[in-house]
Image (tube, rainbow, N blue to C red; front, side, top):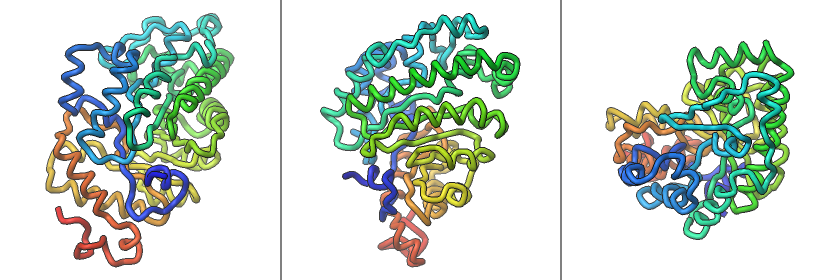
Amino acid sequence: MSIFLDAAAGKDTRRAPIWIMRQAGRYLPEYNALKERYGFWEMCRDPEVAAEITMLPLRRFSLDAAILFSDIMTPLADMGVEIEFAPGPVVTRPVRTLADVRRLRVPGPEGTAPFVADAVRAVRERCHVPLIGFAGAPLTLATYLVDAGGAADGHAGFRVWLHAQPEAARLLLDRLTDVTIDYLRTQIAAGVQAVQLFDSWAGSHEPAVYAEFGLPYTRRVLAALDDPAVPRVHFAVGAHHLLGLFADLPAEVVGVDWRTPLSAARRALPGRTLQGNLDPAVLVHRPEALAERARAVLREGLGGPHIFNLGHGIRPDTPVGHVQRVIETVHGFDRHAEADGAGPAGDDGKGVPA
């Protein structure tokens, strides 16, 4: 058992395990060197390249989990969706009508991005820490399909579409739910040891709309992944107003973005492991402040199991040395001693020296 899996299973570990969203990404010079040889979509679809990129941060840092290098849009290609990356996802033919939705295929487990399972197996052969698989939540995938990948005005166009075409919306969400379940089950069968569902655009909706168009489909996905050995992580962005709804989701771990104090999330989500939530912007400048900001997050995470992470994906302009500094701070923070009021072991009560 690893410290990451212990915490995900609900154990209040002595130190917080740490991994970083987008940890295999553009802030790493090794990744940028590979980007000079391969396009992004090519890297996602080549199992050996995806496995190599997944391993890059683990060779540089002492992280407690790996996350598979891929993209939440990956399974949509097998539904008949044309996707380009420039650099973010662009859907060349948006889904706007009931006829558009009906044209989308549900390819089944064997036909949903089979190269991802190959990448999972390749990583497991060489990875010494748990591997996290992931997918986009149905509402988030639908957002990109309808708005063609753009995020103008917080995807206001998609919010209008939900109200204008509820029949098409429900059919689209049903199909995306089926594909997402197949996709994640395939990853689990190939060997991932945890899964994260990215509900990236949940926070742009009011509670009543999310309760109708988001929550039931996300619940279906998570409920279908009922292997007790594979913890489920749910992560939404800008969604403090939805925490009460998230309490009903069958997920062992709830990711929290940087806007919501972990202590507030702890009160709203009793019995859950919390994950997060250092602001990614903190990592870019003022290295002298990094350790104390990380310790502030760690203190907020006391009172129950906590997995340290950022409150969103790491920024491409993040210095590599700043990442190392945060990891060292997390490793040196004794949660049990701090909770007892003694401060981290070997320190003066203020945490690991900056």
